[in-house]
Length: 370
Image 1 (cartoon, rainbow, N blue to C red):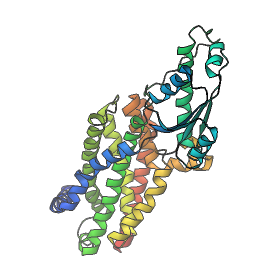
Image 2: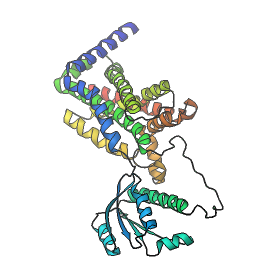
Image 3: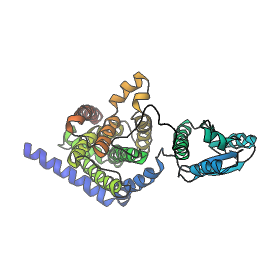
Image 4: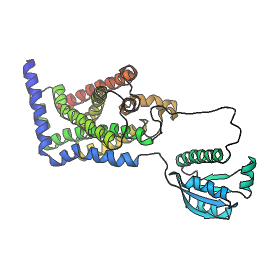
């Protein structure tokens, strides 16, 4: 009896792989789309600020004031978008979005710099608060470095503050975001392909044939999900390789633990795809429903906004989001080299959600089969 079960399961998995191989569009989605998405999103999803438009009003027009302006432009963070000797032009540039930041150097700046009382004014367009905050940090650092270079005899501060960022010393947002993109690609591939594959069987009428066969609902679910679980692992290898070799993302952890974490992550991901397939009658419905699910799952995952910044009730809701836990796993493995002793809570959450999603999907399949 047990042997018959394994034979049925093996033949169902074989049938799924044959269907996938015979569909060239699906093969392109499985193998090419994840790499393309990672390259595009890897460049696009970045919170680093480069070449910020800077408007300069230099009322002093001395060697020191020009040196300060050059300190801004010699960095990769700012570029001069305009210059004037009238402060009104700076306000106009910010109003018309011709500049994101403004630097006003008052008259007497060189003399004040020599006496240690120099002041400059920095203005930022706060309509994009994230960019303004980051640009302000860059500008303050540039001004501080300029003052230290120009006044080396100035007495040292009472506190010698030296900061260092662990795990991401250069604070590159790409190192943080690209592993997150890998998690989203696996979610997209696992959930969307599973739901579409099952609904396609229903559309062409073969799902009913499978349901009246000796296959049980759990065997049917396992047989339908194993091929896409394997595809998800293959995509993990592909996009992780591109992340390391193309983007230079550091990989400090254990690759075996990453594969194990991905296998556990695929359980709720594939379960969500199966649940979507049980309430969809056409592939278009499954496609639309998948994207309706994707939006809150991504927003409540910590991929774009820190979970700790959300209201308490939403922080509790994110515990039921598998993407949140896998983001902690994959970022921990890539950047921190975290091991099982650190990541076991996230693995337990994913395993629990995976078992619940699979059980619910099996129940739904039994009901639809009656």
